[in-house]
Length: 185
Image 1 (cartoon, rainbow, N blue to C red):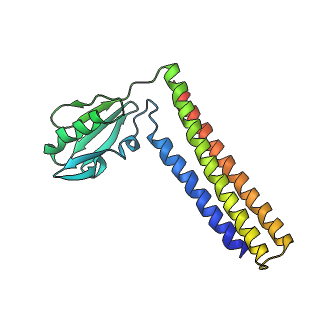
Image 2: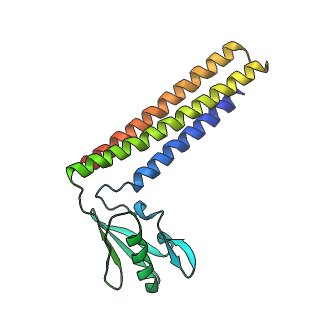
Image 3: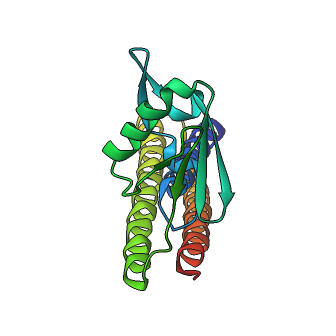
């Protein structure tokens, strides 16, 4: 039974780290990253549709995204969606493709981005700690119900703490890599 608790905790902690990586992909660092458009939807023939499903999105170079819609009639809808979003980028429409320039942020802007990344990492740590708490509560409930002994509870809690420490270290390393990417000029 304790293996099931540990496996469940590992799976949930892994999901927290995956969510952090996804959120980091959406953080605007001055580098062109197609993931920044993943939540942006356009009105495509009356249906809210992600931009990535109506156009090819690629990084032309490190500082520019090129959006090449398969249906050229959707160019204006894509442009409007980008303008209405909180990306803070002005698209350039040449009639065939839309270009999104990503200017490099200032030193102050990079520090704000790092601050935002640290907040996201802290949310991931809190999520991981909540999983630890839930797992520990499950061990205590099993002990209370007489299913396992106190020694098994202590071993289980120690294993969960070790798993938690490993996942927190992963969050820290992912954050460190993102900070390095953001602060790179």
